[in-house]
Length: 167
Image 1 (spheres, rainbow, N blue to C red):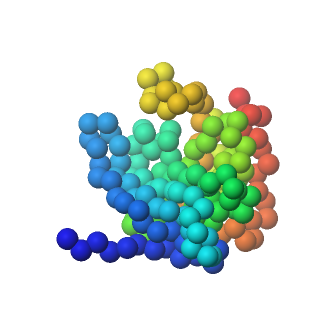
Image 2: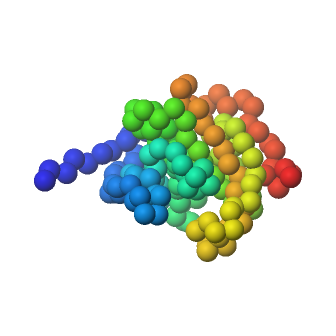
């Protein structure tokens, strides 16, 4: 079987496909593509993933997840990776994506705001949701419309509303 590397290239970061996961109907997990985030010098600075489609799990857990390694934080790698994932999701026919974060995760919340998402709500996770096992109880739910181009440049009005300020 021939495996083709998928590399999504941006100005400051690239995404290298690590693996794909099929839909798991038993747990209701969507198919997903997992990437390494690479800086300009091709150094791995983090990981991200795109979950394809929409269901209750993607509403609370998001279509996009990311983690930037501690020593590489502060360079907006997560936001830059998300922009590449927005384009990739659009090319796969997705019209919108959801990104979520815990209300007290200020760095992730700031990334969501920088990307210009619409804060749909701050909600409590269902009592039986798997993310509660990791300590999460609430999520800020951001929606991104993929029917138009997204960019970090020209974000004149970034929402300053804190998730903690919402009921």
